[in-house]
Image (cartoon, rainbow, N blue to C red; front, side, top):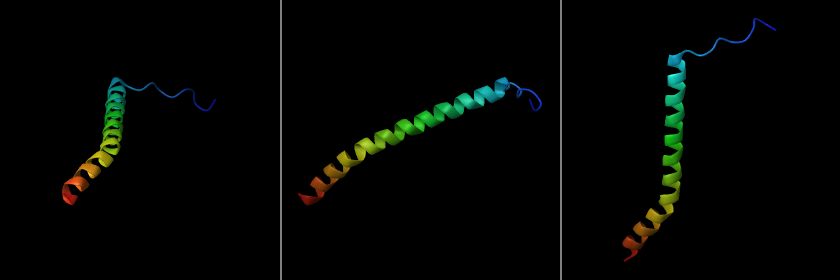
Length: 51
């Protein structure tokens, strides 16, 4: 309607988008792992300090 459809992304732009997606997923998995393990580590350390 206003100038037609946008141009298709270049191969370079597609590769950058894939890299950004992988990095985002890697960060998400790392965050989930940290949030899962933090209470376990906190409990272990607190038991070491008490005894």
